Image (cartoon, rainbow, N blue to C red):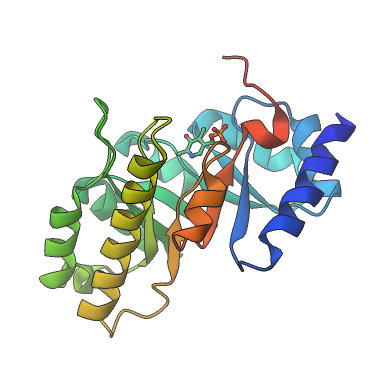
Length: 223
Ligand SMILES: *Cc1c(COP(=O)(O)O)cnc(C)c1O
């Protein structure tokens, strides 16, 4: 367990020059492990299941910032509204609209990232880059009333092929840069979330501003 604190310190040190922030992906790990990371200075934690998030929130200090990083079912949006610092995994317009409606109803603003899909994998969660560009080109976000789109999130292919990983991260970063150029009026659109335990160094070199690391901090997950 004391390893967790050491891993956090090492990652903070390694990321300091890049300016990228660290999300400690704590899904499937017990609250004691999160506290260990908190005590080492970590404040942002990533969870992928609503029930687990809701169970952990009251057990952690109030200044813990929670990122939701998994597939969010529309019928669970209400239960996490007002509780997250960032929902990183908006993967459909239907979900985005619902997040917006619930945030407005609750009198809050929900910060989100749009999930972009570039990896060559069976599971295609998220928007294709072209779909995302269309959304921003047609200024779909102008109709949002209580949602702030802060950037995009993506994953590289799960492969050993380093060139493939670099191409995927570049595609994510390019999508982000194109949106920014296209929509200079989009304020606070500044986050590119990419990079996990196995590829975060590459992601940072490709322009990541937020890395999501689980295994390299907490060890393997027991599902
Ligand atoms: C689980 C998960 C991570 C962390 O993966 P590790 O390989 O354990 O670092 C990052 N991002 C998302 C979206 C995840 O679901």
